[in-house]
Length: 338
Image (cartoon, rainbow, N blue to C red; front, top):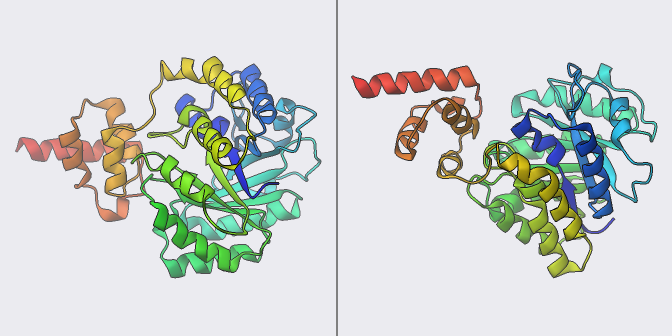
């Protein structure tokens, strides 16, 4: 594996746009084409013990994912994500080499205990362990160092810095990187997962590819930036930037063909990407779903949204459920009409 690597997460993070409904043929073709394009890691979707539908990238079992994978992976490492609320240690089956190679354990700050239990089970089952603490910037330096020490005991394959709300700048990444770099074993990979609320994803990713370190790094991206709200770092952009600056590695044409064949038709019907509303959520450090849920139900001006976001209590910044958002909007409108 190279020092700098890309992790393609369209089938997982892009699923927020389609409800994880993708045609089975599209799933197989996307995985195969990303392997052919030399992506280092491909994340195929979520493990969800409650999932029971075909043509989607939420999988009830690890074995089911194997049906979508080619025999020859050409060195690409295949991953799935496990949310600690959707997939439990008892749902894991042992690694066989016929399905995924690794599992990304994702969790919020209040779910650390559950995440550590799940991470231990992933290791015991024989999978590569990827640890994904969401909203990294929510942790103080001391809190993050304490978490990193607990994670380090598990000897993870990788730990990611996660810019869940799309407002981390280069210095933020470097601050948390230094904590991980000082605590994790030398062979552990450090990753970066970004969102594009303030159009910072590509800028920060470029800086990472120029970062002087002996540590192996991995950057998450998705085709056409497909993902919830403002979306993610674009695979085609960061892969091309890698080719331009570090040597020709990724097949950009294969990546663009996938975008043309599958992602652009979705884009014509579903919306994602940078917008003033997403910028506001990033600017004030709020969950992007405050914009997504509200705009799905109401015609709201940018000025109104800016006023509305300030009515959300600080303790609810990261706790975003649709009924709560709509309730708060109703209260906001009532107060305006008094």
